[in-house]
Every structure is written in C-alpha cells, then in structure tokens.
Picture 1: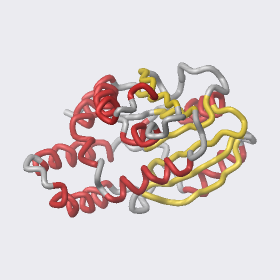
Picture 2: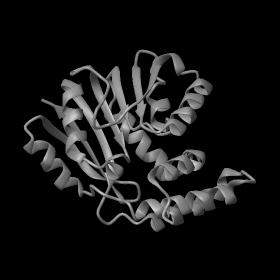
Picture 3: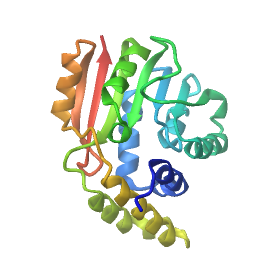
Picture 4: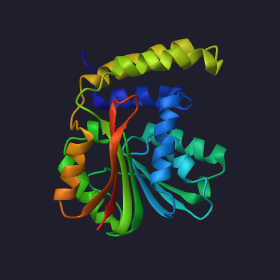
Length: 227
C-alpha cells in the first residue's frame, strides 16, 4: 500500500538531518542565505527541520518566522534552533504555505526551499507569498525541475556518506532513500528556471534578480524582488 503523505513526512523528519553536511545541500543553503542578505524579517515558508532557518538566524539583528504544516518537522527544527542558541530570534508556528498566518506586508524576506513540488495549489502559495512580502522585499525560491531524478541525488549523497563518520549512517541512508523514492512519484509543480521567472514577472508583482539551477541541476533557483 502506498504510504500517506503524512506518513512520508513523519519518516522524512527522522532522517532529513542526514542531508545537513552534504555538499550540494550546503551550497543551496548558502545561496538562499546570500539571496536574503540584509533583510531582517524573514519567513521560512515550509521550514522542515530548520536547516536554512538556523543559518538565517545566525544574524543577531534578524527575526525569522519558521513555519511548516508537519509537527514532527517542527519539533526537530525547535531542538536544532535551541542547540544553535538561535531560539530567541525565531518564532515557530504550524501553518500552510497557501494560507499563511501572517499580516500582509509583514516580512521583507521569503524563503521557499524544496516546498513547491509538494503543494496541492501552487497558485495560492504564490498569492500568499506576494501578500506577505512588503515592496522592496525579496523571495528566494528553489524547487524541483521537470527532469529531477532522485537517483542522481541519492548517488551523490551516498558518495559523501563515508566522510560523515557515523556508524548508524548506512541504515539511516537506506530509510532516507526509500522515502525519497516514494516522494519522486508524488512530485508536482515542476518548473525550469526561466519558466518560473516569467511567471513571477508576468504577475506584475515581482522583478526577477536571478534564475538558474542548483542541487546538482535538479532544482530551479529563482530570486525576485517584490515591486
């Protein structure tokens, strides 16, 4: 029987930290942080276990709203932020990216990292993004391309596992791989960078600053300014 979406994310939350030190994941994380440089009120919309949230919250002048719809993910994120000492700078809330519990124009930065490929209504997500980001603010968005192949990602990850020196890593990776192969069959809202950039530009509410690929060319990566 195919696992439910909730079951998948519950399993994913337990092994997602495996990705933390993988080179292509670190590279994408750094690109998001750089894209949102200089912004002080950021929404991490679909924060997962808080990998990028923790990096954003290193700035002592910044306040981050970390939001996800999965309680297991949020619990892992909360523990991570406490360990990092950044808990006071982050508000954690459960919510949907298509109905953000946040006032209009409340943030000057919006992060969406590997979220769009799993939402049911992408239009509502982009409408909410436009609503909550104030003029002059920026959005940094990465998600799956039509050609995304999780086997490419898993092969690259497996090559780096010996560097992590964790005796339980092999079993963890096998669970992680199984979950990712299930998610591959559920991918939606897939875009090429230029296609997604044009969609934002045509809305009249965003000016695209960057449109390229990342994640071993499996993801599009778009940075845009709210106009």
